[in-house]
Length: 172
Image (tube, rainbow, N blue to C red):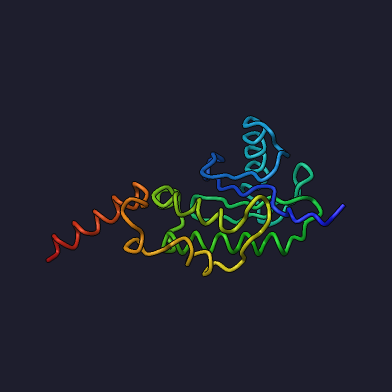
């Protein structure tokens, strides 16, 4: 059997009540939605109010980081290198922080969730870490909206562009 490139089982963001804000699972370790939610609840219970950054839970290595009202998690196999997982977590957090302009909180994250999902996809594909440099991820995710044809922009991007245009026309 060849080497196993899969090093990430899941990427999760939970709020300070333990509710899912964003999660992406990369294998069938938790095949049903109910099992995923139970894992997330258990994960929150074990990591809430602790000072550790790395834990082993349900045979998986989990690294996590807290922010104002969010908890960021990277879940890997039990035998995965913790430094690799921590580096991946730092890259994801730094990317999210840059997207949210250092305002890493739940409301701001929901406002830019489309960019957060793109960043997660650029970071990890199918459980394989694809990029560990947050500036490279940002360059691919935050393409200037002027460069994107209107027909290819998301609804959020169109509204943001219209809002900025209106703001500048009112300020003149």
